[in-house]
Length: 402
Image 1: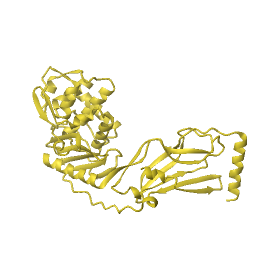
Image 2: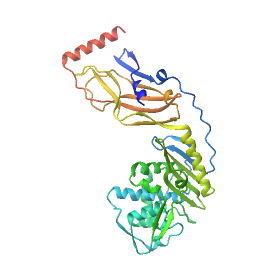
Image 3: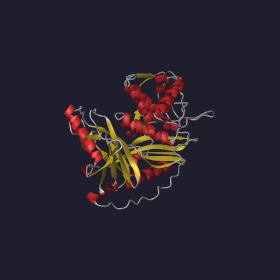
Image 4: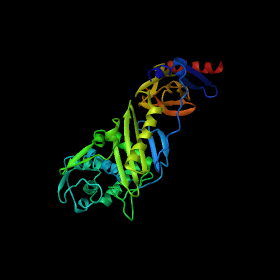
């Protein structure tokens, strides 16, 4: 990344637009001239995955590495509980809940079938314990209890789930309960793409709570239960997230893994067995880590170049990027990237700090892998009358004799 930035100012080509006294300024920089050609990227076809739907993304950039039927709404089974836990944590972060708050266990929650935390009817259980019961033990009873506590009823909580889904951009999901249990009349639906969006939001927004997804076991009411995500026990890089199974859904798994500064999130839905969902997930993770990398282009508030300013108290202004920029590229192909910074006009003062001045485009193999605004990095006041007059004459004669 440092060498990439050193080349930002390597070549400057200025094209004069005589009809409007405007400059189209294009800064072209490439790693090729400095460090030679990288070996061609040889990336095999993605592995065949035995699942109805699946997706693999770079968690930092959102880049999709592999996908198949990723927008198909499918029954998610207990993957639903990622949303249930997400809302509960949001309530904690907003101050509406405390981790040590007691939650009343209703008869409905206590009677829930399927996987359980084994809470007692009419008992009080802390929010923190219920979160672990949902995330680690996949407790349907815990899911209903937290839903009733937050929204008054599970039906009202399902409405909250749908509203959160809209906010997160989950366009192919619909929730009718907090647990993911199917019935003869209805079941929840989620797509693989929606699930990675939810997983991303969980990892990014709930950093202090996400480690719960990596806990291998939880004991409540004297009953110790292991996390159903078997990859936590066989792959040290996997640190979450959630399994699911019903007859309608098949065996499902959302997983996240981090290695050498790269975090991947995968979803497989509708596999044939517990072992199959683990194996198919490992195929995706292995492919992603082997053939791709997360590459840092720019730091936050990094100056890309310095350009002339006309009619100002200063003669030039720094232009740069406000936020960190990462891209997903084939492993080893960073030297092949080229970037251009396009400025459409001659730059006249006054300028505001943070004013958009142009666009930077980063290209790899003729594909634009990043496009973003560049900003003035400081304020430039307008110069005095004499300075403005001299600059006007300079531009005039420059246009006449070009």
